[in-house]
Image (cartoon, rainbow, N blue to C red; front, side, top):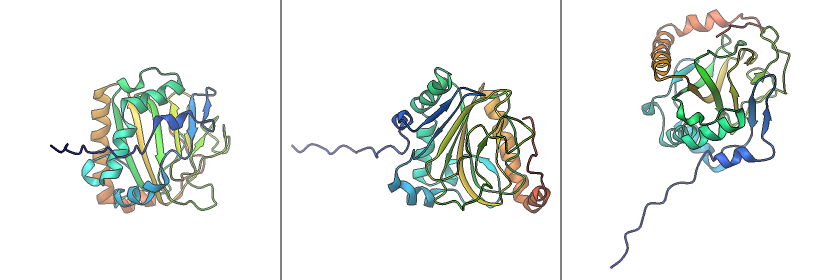
Length: 238
């Protein structure tokens, strides 16, 4: 009797072992963060691009599987897995990070209002961002920056990180975990996951994100106009 062939799982898109490479940058001061490059396989580029959601508005929106194709949903499953969360947490000084609830938000494009300097809210324990842009122009606009101060976008802790395919940044939220980027308008593809202090916070942030999505769908032109003239050093505490 012939054996029934068993389905073969596809190779991982996001392998925690890649974080252990020698080129991963980990800092404990002025707050805990890491920078890891080339975290995604080259042969997944086209599929992930095709499966990326086509939001009509700028900004970050809560992940909904129906908006995304199968490869992007698989990437998000791997990004929020216990194994990957614990690998991030181990490098940032937080054992068992995977025990905490996670919230995924996705951005396809930005307007100039986005990227102001902030720390993230106290309900976030760790935030990680995975970039999916095939290319980026030779400009600083839109490039992620870890910062020493809340009032100076040019006081960098390390050189800025271009939002290119496979680049990943993660940081432990602190009262001084300042980060942001120079104003940028246009496409900038990124998947963000935040591990949160409670399920109540996850529900609250998800509901707020859905309301924001509705507002931007109705008043996206206003949102774009409000941000057009923002100062390069603009900041908010949360």
